[in-house]
Structures are given as C-alpha cells and as structure tokens.
Length: 144
Image 1 (cartoon, rainbow, N blue to C red):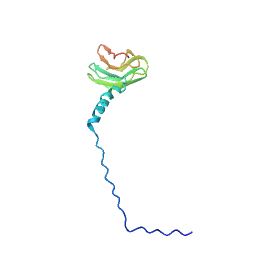
Image 2 (image 1 turned 90 degrees about the vertical axis):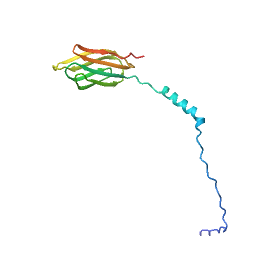
Image 3 (image 1 turned 180 degrees about the vertical axis):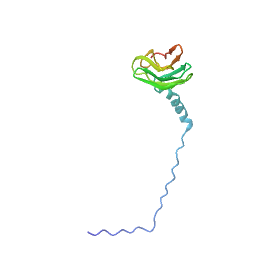
Image 4 (image 1 turned 30 degrees about the horizontal axis):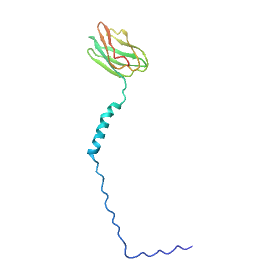
C-alpha cells in the first residue's frame, strides 16, 4: 500500500512567543526563624554514645614494655611507653567486668594489676598511672 503524499503547509506561519519564566526568589526573612529553630534543635536530637578516654601514664624512670589493658569485651595496648610519657586510647564498654593491666618492667618482669569493675554505659576519663610504688587507678563515672 503506498504512503499518502505529504500535505502542503501554508506559507504564513504563526510564531508563538512564550514569556521567560522568572525564577522564584528564596525569601530569607520568612524562612530564617524556621532554619534557626532547626539548627538550635539539631544538637539536642543527636545520639550520645558513652565512651571512656583512657590514659596510661609511665611515671617510672625506665621504659615499660608490652603494656596491655583488658576491659569487658576487649583489650588495647602498646609495645612500649617511655618514662614520663602517656598512652591514650578511647573505647566503649560492652558488658560488665573488671579491668586488668599487664606490662613488662625495666627488669623484664611481667607485672599485673586489677582495676575497677566497669559496666556497660560507663563513661568519662580513666587514668592508669604506673609509678615506682605500683599501679594507681582513677575510675570513670559509673553508668547512669
């Protein structure tokens, strides 16, 4: 079947003019109180995760070797701590249990000490000071 012949169009064509679209202007004054309210409320809605910031301090005159701290559900440590130096570690307590520290002294003897009992949700600073007279623990705040 043959295709129909193209129709002729008129010689005068109409030109349609479409007006330009004006962009909407963001109204700062009307939105400012809402944005300010959201920014002030946002920090209050954030989640708080309880963690402990531990500091192990060597207050002896010799370096300590292989320092390991155990806490409920995990442990952390370092190969050595120089005299007068600190080692920092941040962790979250999962479960309940007693803390322990082991380290090697200048005479290459293994030393052990037990610390406070931690419960899940405990947070705050924990200081473990290794001195010539032994290990001193300063516990974080108990869980709320």
